[in-house]
Length: 111
Length: 112
Image (cartoon, rainbow over all chains, first blue to last red; front, side):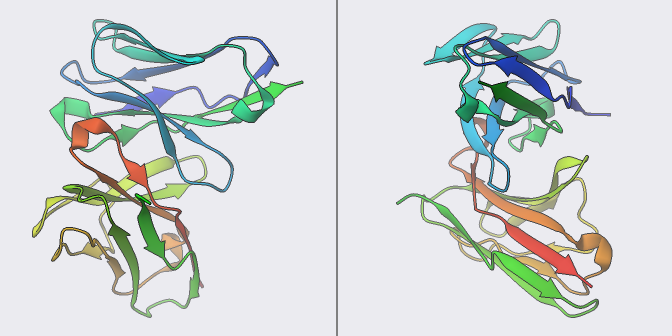
């Protein structure tokens, strides 16, 4: 069964710390991977995409991809209370152009 | 402003009364998709479209219909809504599916 798995959390970190969010997926041929942020009552917003093994950095965000181990992670450096949200991992499983979403990890950054 | 527009934002209806949720994007995107989001279940795909007149079922298509007669519009139709279709619905579009999706603001549907 094609799946994208995330720990639901909540993950609680102090302000200024590094938040680490993880995601595993079921399909070895997947090529496109995404992280979305969703604030309570709002729609998902794309924050990172990654296609190749290794790290991709954008500001305080770093996405890490390991296709052999079938996991993708998101690191948030210098976490701020405004980063408190649910983070959704999405994968275009099996080479599809339509993403399958994980259930999301709730992140709480406390002052 | 580039955006995906859904209407209505909130809708309360009765069982069996046909309804349509509209979705329109102004970015000339090829791909469009409908999702429903339920607590504990996350985002689940209902239907998607890769181009005009090309639609296909997602993971939870039962009870829903879609059409793609124009590139910009992708309405979601509930012919006979039931209470188990009470949910938060999102429309999303992408220039090309491997690039990530832009989401609309959502439609909160309650079927009583």
